[in-house]
Image 1: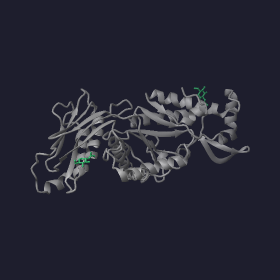
Image 2: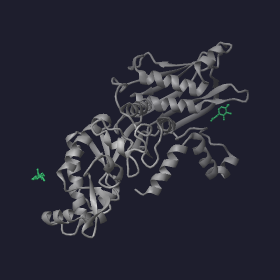
Image 3: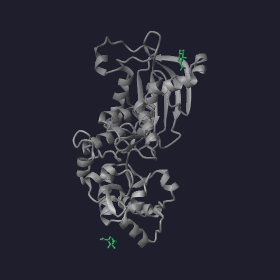
Image 4: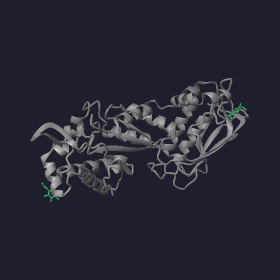
Amino acid sequence: MTTALRFSLLLLGVSFSRGFLNDLFDEEEEAERVVQASKYGSLWPLPQKVQLSEVSFKLNGVSFKISDAKESTATPSCSLLQDAYRRYYEYMFGSFKRQEGRKSRHAGPSDVTELQVWITSSESDCDSFPSVASDESYELTVDQPYAVLKAPKVWGALHGLETFSQLVYEDENGAKSINSTTISDFPRFAHRGILLDSSRHFLPIKVLLANLETMAMNKFNVFHWHIVDDPSFPYLSRTFPQLSQQGAYHPYTHVYTPADVKMVIEFGRLRGIRVIPEFDTPGHTQSWGKGQKDLLTPCYSGSKPSGTFGPVNPILNTTYDFMSQFFKEVSTVFPDAYIHLGGDEVDFSCWKSNPDIQKFMEQQGFGKDFTKLESFYIQKLLDIVATSQKGYMIWQEVFDNGVKVM
Ligand SMILES: *[C@@H]1O[C@H](CO)[C@@H](O)[C@H](O)[C@H]1NC(C)=O
Ligand SMILES: *[C@@H]1O[C@H](CO)[C@@H](O)[C@H](O)[C@H]1NC(C)=O
């Protein structure tokens, strides 16, 4: 993947917000919108089935509550849901404390007083991590006096809460309102990801969390964390602390500690978002070389080392010892079933210049075909990752180059 594309994805990730999306939408659809507002209100992304009516109800922030339906299999100890109830209450009405200060108003006869959340399957997934196979479906019925949100798992309930919050609007007098509505929804794609690159630019934790929050508002479910690359190595490894010590932009202020990483993963989980880290090798590894001696290939200028380094050195056993230990750690730190192994843009010129690599190529019978050497490396890496019980992802380019990946 090119730098330019990564960069534009980064910008998209950071500036992604309802406002941003609405702006885009406005520009493209302006002509039509002048004639007629969307009949679906502000629903985004559009649910699979929507029936909106013109029957409108009021919501009173003082008395309105979001709670477990009594039939729900989730208990009040499901902190994922409790946390989401609080969060969505605040999106809709502002902080609860401020509401308490206001003059209380009794619920009127046309009020929706409660959103009941009903987890219907015996296993709510409350304490699990989301996966590519997670059931994210839900059904939402907004009626009076109760709205009911039914979902087999907590993941669908999270999306239903988001949808409910998008249905709330203020009438001409500023009163919170919601129309009678029936929605049934499930995602078209199981993997809905955003990539952020925290190597070229270090992204403070609060930026990562804001991005996760915005992803949840747009029902995205995979944070592809391109965490290290050539420019810097901000991941603080317990096994190899010298990697960030030497390879980060700053060894203390520009690193992600184990606690930081845990926080990002849990913040994502509470919003139904998987965190898939990318540790790209054998290219894109200049920053790794600063803290790990002999990991990168020394490049030659004629018969002498030039002092610069190329991709990971694929001919040393120590390389694979390092990768085994490193990915063993990564696979315990990141709970998702997949790790992204990169594999893109391997520059062969340094490998070509190195006499030890030339000799190895000859011994292995690879001829002058450096994709065979790349295959050799990737194969060994995949075996290493397979022993940690993880699945892997790689860039398409690896397939396109004909590298054997199974
Ligand atoms: C909600 O109901 C109001 C009042 O009947 C109506 O004016 C409005 O168009 C409805 N909104 C949607 C999105 O259907
Ligand atoms: C590297 O490992 C291979 C396979 O285990 C072994 O045959 C070889 O002697 C090792 N090379 C070195 C330099 O230790």
